[in-house]
Image (tube, rainbow, N blue to C red; front, side, top):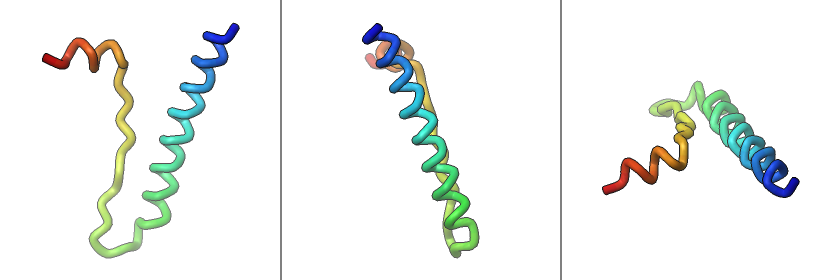
Length: 52
């Protein structure tokens, strides 16, 4: 059961990060020189395999 709670928590953290990025982009859309941010999520296994 603890593993399932950890999976749920990490999923909610990812969604919260995405919402934070979108909110920041919307808040600064009319600011001169502002460039949008993007949240990029990758699989941890893929990151580990990609490292030399």
